[in-house]
Image 1 (cartoon, rainbow, N blue to C red):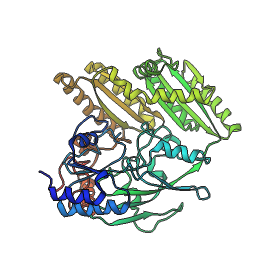
Image 2: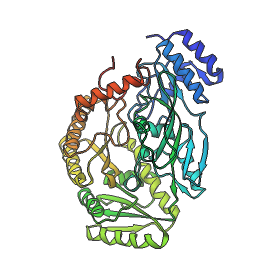
Image 3: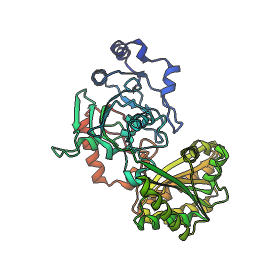
Image 4: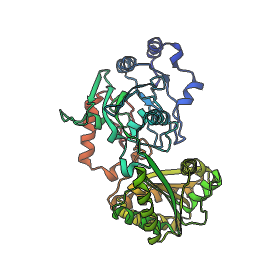
Length: 463
């Protein structure tokens, strides 16, 4: 449906010409995300305050126009795409860290703050914000809130929702609400903060967040542990956690991802290894040396073929650069990828790895697995040429089978990427009719006109 030109005129007047565009060359820039799908919006605006966001929503309601919130555009499931047209609201002007309260270990930030920049700001004050998605250098706090981003440190420290104390948000009807608290405890009424976090921008537009901080760990030790096979590495992860040693990260890479990362950055990864674990321990300097030795001894007992400890912070950073380079390097294997972020209980990771091996053999497709083994979160990638219909059909059947196995093992089809549009067709595999009905009623209560980020999460349109 063509957008009302009066709406565009009012919108431009509202935010000012420099912060509005309806020119296609600008709109294309905000029509895609990491899925590579393209949905060109009708307009894009760059608000500077919660009041402007409120005015935008009220105007959109008057003209029955969809509104799509957008952070850094790094999402993997199409959550920021204008699949039904409308106006994309970009928050990069609302990019200030408003307060860092060192006494109470909290911060107030706007949604356009880049995650890594925020982490660096608090680090300079001896503080620590643990959520650390691979896209931290470009993703924003607002986007992390929408998807409930995780990252490598989730095994010890949890995910984004565990660090959100309160929000300022604009409802689809234009009201500005404040949720949550700025204290460690607070149980007055429903927990609207946690409801909004992870809702993929379908319930409200976050304009400010109050975040919990931690003291910065005094020291960190990073090590790589090579195994002969993925199966042995997966079993080792389960045994390490069972031994009551909790590293802050346990990342894993299969042989294909090891080779890709090494070819990309040349950091000396063991390319002949069947699998590699990157593990870190943190805490007081006098304590973590013993923890690292315990991990090394345990790893060797569990079949590790080599253990290497990073001797400097620079070496550790190079390892993490290699780990984070896997996703872009995948395109050396094929022009397209299907990327899933399944999660199973840690003890069932070996079963999931076995299923991936079976699918690789059955389909003959190129499959690469890496991710956060410490919390059972596996990033599973099928590399293919989507113009080859045979390959595409095999890949889709493999994803369907993998999701069935994941759920049978007590897991979930998405750990941190969200549902968006790419996982919506599989939504009913995990969510019961009764639960979906309740979610739709919540959506209706927040967004009676169905204007905020429509076409996301649910496998059928909302009436």
